[in-house]
Amino acid sequence: MHALVDAVAAANPRTVVTVESSGPVLMPWAGRVAGILEAWYPGTEGGHAIANVLFGRVNPSGRLPATFPQSESQLPRPVRPGGATEQDVFTLNYSEGAAVGYKWFDKNNLQPLFPFGYGLSYTTFAFGAPTAAAHPDGSVGVDVPVRNSGPVRGMEVAQVYVSPVGGGWEAPKRLGGFQKVDLAPGQAKTVHIKIDPRLLAMFDQSTHQWRIAPGSYRLVVGDSSRDSRGTAIVRLPGLTLPSDWRPGLRAAAPQGSPAERGL
Image 1 (cartoon, rainbow, N blue to C red):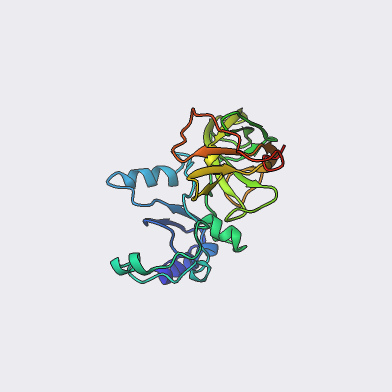
Image 2: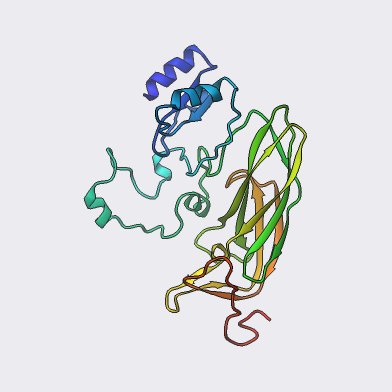
């Protein structure tokens, strides 16, 4: 398949490749084609949907839910031809722990072919400076102005990635939340994204609680895991959440001395 794409691209540099796959695939020819459309497995109406995007009837707004590597060597372990077997499920050692996907690439300073959250549009978008505020239940609200700075109507997906300023997580950052916004040319809206407090916490297996460490947290807004359009800092108190916490329940201040509570 790679040889076929190379041959077609050599004959016509305006070649666009449509990929139908269940997940990330290697694309050694990516730099030699004019465009790539990841269609996944679109079903019986896939032909119409793909044509509508390619001919501009629909402005694409999907974002990658996985990281596409440049090479197999960037992955935590070799890929078995034909996929994983039943035996693999019981014998594989997932030594990367919770640092999976984009977090693996961030932790190991690897440059992917296409990062998590990436996607193109027939228009462009500009982000304003984000603002953030902590709420009593432990969640964080982020507001970010988004403007369609291009010539046609389109939808942008504003994404917020969070991390403690002092580090200490399984990877440099986590996806905190995202929101899609539909904008006409020149139109601007302020997007509100609420971050679940469990995404700001570490799980304590001994007490079966989520623990948010006190301190400053960085919130980076962009349109992929490797894009930064603005940053806000918010300071959070030390909080604990029960293992069955759900939105609507308040967080509790952890027990301990004032120093342990970050006071």
